[in-house]
Length: 69
Image (tube, rainbow, N blue to C red; front, side, top):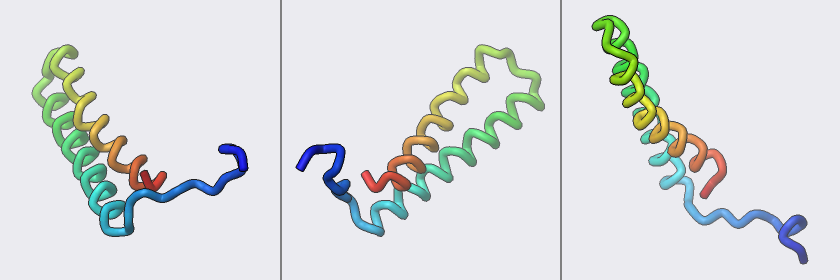
C-alpha cells in the first residue's frame, strides 16, 4: 500500500487534541489583545512584529488539533 492510499494514522487522542485546540485559541486571544493594546498605544511597527509569536503559537495549536497530529 503506498503512502498516498494508506489511511492517516492518528497519533494523539481526543483529550490531547482538545488541549492543543485550547492552547491555540488562547494564543490567538493573546495576540488579539496585544494587537489592540499596541494599536491604542500607537506603538511603533517594530513592536507589532512581536505579535507574530502569539499568532504562530495559536495557529500551531489549532492546526495540530485539526490535523490530529
